[in-house]
Length: 219
Image 1: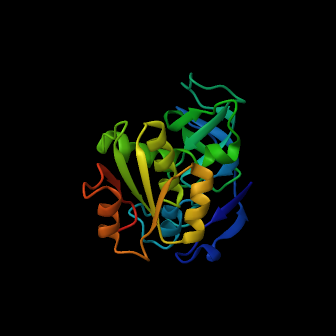
Image 2 (image 1 turned 90 degrees about the vertical axis):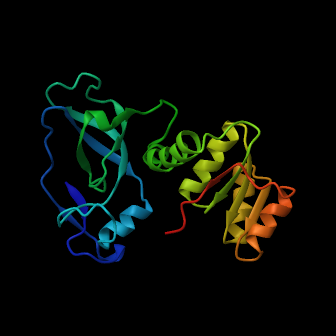
């Protein structure tokens, strides 16, 4: 099978496609035919050796995939061959087939396509944890989303809207913010490169400020 491999630490352009032996599932694992793999910023950091997780070389990047189960290992009872699943690989997703512990798989909704499924868990999981588990965002509250035009940012906007919160979306590109308004029905956007950011927030909230801030851009 084909795999996208990081054989030496460097830039994404240094990755190579090679043939490798297909994996076989062990106890508690499933083998998945990958139809789509999410691409996330940690993948870029990982191939540069700058991420907290440092796999042994060579490795395939790819933290999340969507596909069909081809084979199940012993003691796997929650899935069967042919099931469509989302899998949290952590690393190694950019291959034609992957083996993952069944506990790291989720059944795909029938109406969800593979591309959406493969880009869902990391962005939405991060945003949900930030807004719900940590921020305790409630209906009627105001939330400021920084880096709003990226994957985690747009997921945060979607979740915040579903919770009944009011969103102020901040980004560094007027063009991307305009698309954000159209795609996610955001009424308030701020280009933080063009204004005194703190004063602008206080102005828009009648000097009250916001209830919750999701900030995933800084160091």
